[in-house]
Image 1 (cartoon, rainbow, N blue to C red):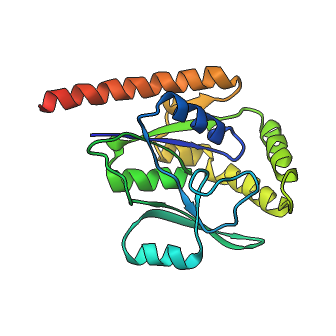
Image 2 (image 1 turned 135 degrees about the horizontal axis):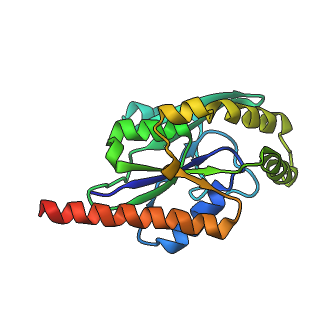
Image 3 (image 1 turned 90 degrees about the horizontal axis):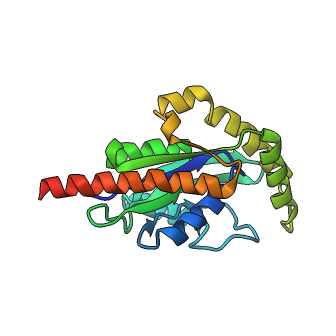
Length: 207
């Protein structure tokens, strides 16, 4: 049985950069790309950063029972929904990488089972550094959405509170500090390799 390595963390903690590095280092792993109904940003690629869809597609997939988890946010620009689809996921034969939220991670555990989903929680000790990264990224947009940036930044403080992390069973071995990028990636890959080795041992025992 395969596993889903779920990368989670506050906005601008470096999740996407770490995800891209892991993609390169684990080319045999599948990718679970989130869907969203929000507009695409200039630096994003449809089908790579997210699957960008409209509300009609979202409701159609919902009616066909293809949605594992979904969450909607009331923003200054309307309701934006993010969701994970079960379409194409085959844990019998594959391992997967995904970037998600803490809530999304918990829903994946509920759907597939706790032993199938491995949390990779990315942290940055200095919130000021995260905010600067977010501002730099937003300034590069043709139409910067600073109010939404502030809403998301403040919401992260509540969404990723220590209380919520404890409830989600995010322990010290699930936390990776992104102070030095390559050191962080190497530590994450050590954890992934341990999980893959353990999974392989279990598979052999069942044969």
